[in-house]
Image (cartoon, rainbow over all chains, first blue to last red; front, side, top):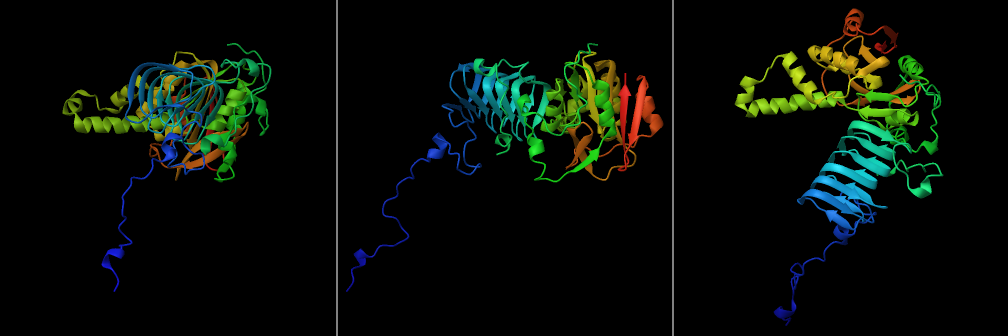
Amino acid sequence: MWKKDDVKSPTTPEVSTPPAPSPVLAVPSASAPSSFALPVSPRAAACISQGIRIKGEVTGNEDLFVDGLVEGKLNLTTNCCLTVGPNGTVKADLNAREIIVRGKVEGKVTARDKLQVWSTGQITGEVQTGRLAIEDGALLRGKVEAGKQSAKPAPAAVSSPAPELNSGTAAD
Amino acid sequence: MSREVTRNIYSNSRSHAPSVGVPAIGASRGPESPEATRVSNGLKEFLWNLDGLGRGTLLDLGPAWQTTLSFFIERGFRVSSEDLLRSWKAFLTEEETRLREDSAARESLDMTPSGRASRFLVENLQYPRVSFDAVLLWDLLDYIEPTLVKQIVANLTELLRPGGVVFAMFHSKKPEGFQRYRVLDSNTLQVVSSSVVCPPQRVYQNREIQDLFGRYRTVKSFVGRDQLRETLFIK
């Protein structure tokens, strides 16, 4: 006779272990579907995530992803990229080499190299940038100055014309 | 008004030099979403009037399109962008909500068209006087309350420098769909069908248009086959 104890239900797992945390949350994968991947610069080391609210001045020299609320000033020095995520709301003057806006920004935006405004992005305030990319549907309200005359170029870029920004990046 | 010549704005080239560094996302999307184009003599004349202007200032009251912004920025303009129709729509929605929730506001607010227009303009079209050389008004006036239209035109007149140019469009009959426009090149506009932001309010006759812009010294009109009148007003 067969032993009942040997029979195990195939549907009930013996041990229920929690799934390993998805690496996508910590390190966004470029190949993951866009709805799941965090829209953050691949080099972004710091993140102000949704639900976090900061009032005051934020400075740094690392890439930063803001999906929460920041009020005050946001200044990234050197070669840094600032991304305002789709849930991010920033009421502050922004200053970074590259700025990507997918959420709401109120304040003066200074992107020394380039500014990308995605379709969900909304900017109210003055914009100064080396290069500008706006996706259809984006909201931009304020003065826009783009080009080398208005932005302070990096020393290496002074002698050469600004390279063309890949027009597909903002729409990806 | 300074008219230092730095770049010929009146070039009829579709290919923008990459060295300028303002890419055209909208233009690159053209083949994906086939949108109509229209030859625009009004735009051509508008640019002709701005030809030779060094670092000119432009107020674009339509949506912020990549192609339009790039076109003018590449030619040395400092562009201010304000989607007036969307702001008007947002204002109306906000005010409706406020009136529904706040009974005190219902009694205290001036609900006449004039009062509403004044409240709207407190937070919109706020720029220093005589600060613009050119304004792209598109066909917005057809979609805005006539009372507000008068105030907008009066405000724009204050914002323009002497010799400044306004480019506006008026439908000769009630428009069937809702469209937005973006600059493709110096005499071509791309017509982008869009969901209705505001319903059309009024079809203006020539006399009414002239009265609205009575303070301008020159008016030039171009009527297209699509019954759209492109009009230039020079202050």
